[in-house]
Length: 93
Picture 1 (tube, helix red, strand yellow):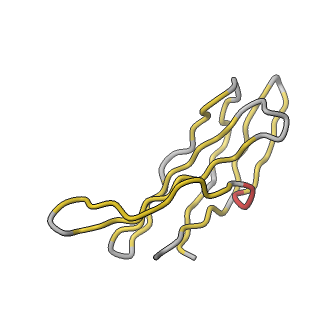
Picture 2 (tube, one colour):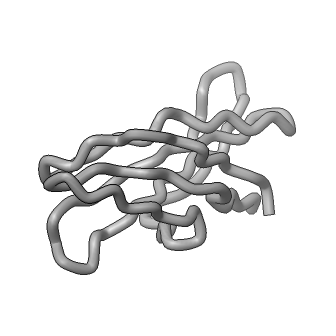
């Protein structure tokens, strides 16, 4: 099975503080192949960063289909952090 790893970085603002988070700090929480019809499957991955102080969590999803990786925009799932800069990228690895 294929795997996708998150590289690059993201900057979030929380209570006036800017925090840079490296892609390597995101853990793979869910992954697997999904049937998308006509016998085709794509690999999907969900990576999550859990703030060590439980202030927020950030999710990023990616897919791999026919050799092409798509990285979707990261989003804050919990907490009031705001994404200032998103330079995260999923790479096959």
